[in-house]
Image (cartoon, rainbow, N blue to C red):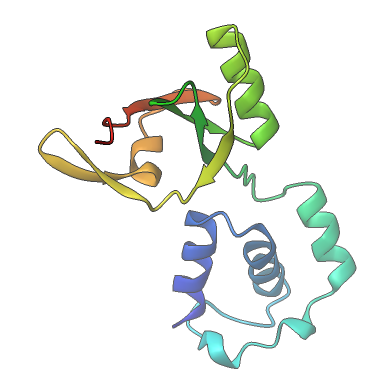
Length: 143
């Protein structure tokens, strides 16, 4: 894999540390976008500068996750939020009760929506603001 692909993937998958390390090494001209990523030595980086870049969020990466919050024995709501705490607060404000539990799901989890298959990552692009409700799931009764 070349640096350009690794950099784009790190941005797409919100891998903050890797994205900032690559960004720093590119700025310092210690690597180029066409280099082979397997031959890159991240130890070339000035770790203090990279840490400062991450703290200042130079690349503007705001990691958003998807959480499943249990409403009752059969109903669940999926909420996009920056943290589990934010998801629970949003749920409590929206539904005037606390959830029975809250679990993070992978953004690449795929499910059927109408006649298509979509992932939470792709569906997130439709959100105008975060936190937001992604959808609901009703668990079928077990017999």
